[in-house]
Image 1 (tube, rainbow, N blue to C red):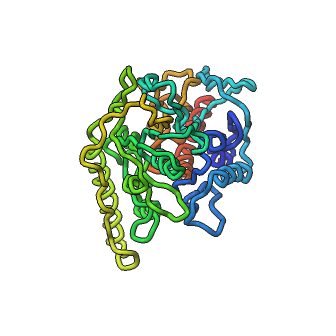
Image 2 (image 1 turned 30 degrees about the vertical axis):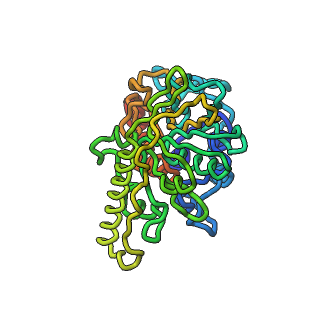
Image 3 (image 1 turned 120 degrees about the vertical axis):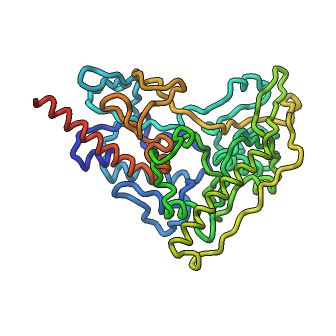
Length: 401
């Protein structure tokens, strides 16, 4: 957004609570790699320039990439400036920070969608002897106590963390609810290549029947490993990970109860994957690629034991750590404006908030399916910048009149 505003000669400032790429520096595990290939890190006027376009950036490389972009575009970033409140004034907004106040006509909220880990209320019933860690707090297996680990959540973060911990020698149990299975490579090309080429990632928010549901869809079970391997539930069980259903609750005496819907959840995930691969096959056929890539294939169905465990005694000593990879929510506690719904989410129409001059960036499926990817930020920013300029022009016209 800063680059787009600079291109329009619009004076602005970027307020950052820490250093550039703060969340990547402080809220990610050590071995994390970007889920999208290097070539897909496309920002306005900036992209990948290395010799491994199909690889996946490591955490230090991601941080360096974002910091390099900020430097390349000379973004006017004020680091170590924490916003404490934003409220409307007569002709714009008052932004209060721990480094002073700002008055402006426009505010773009780009504080991210993953500020606070979602942990169920019944987590307080977990026995005190068990360490509880969120995906934000997890760093590596060596930082965990010896013994069994229960990972809650089977989307991208949960599956990657479970695999790493299992390889460390600690027995892992994975609690899987709704998830979306996906092959890393399909017909010889990265799945992200197919979704990019076929236009899946460019699908707009106003082209979807139920955008609310689309914005709540879990992330694909993808991992950016050097060998480009698929990390799904079959791969995890082959490593020795034990699968259980979604955590339904924890009793007062420390007994965890799991839903009996694991087989159905996995069957639904396989079905969704099949639909995506069908779409890719149709696109390849229509566009003359069928004889230029590998033939279509389908991964075997997800393997689930006949009677997955429905309970686990957390007081037995078998589990020493619980990792909550159950998703995140944004933190808008500093936003002193009536623009939030009953769930604490900002009400907006493709990033245009129902308050004059207030915009949102970086939320799931903001304007396109790829909105939360690095590759989606530029297109969203250009769209919103167009609206922002029109808003400023109309305001100046009223003042002049």
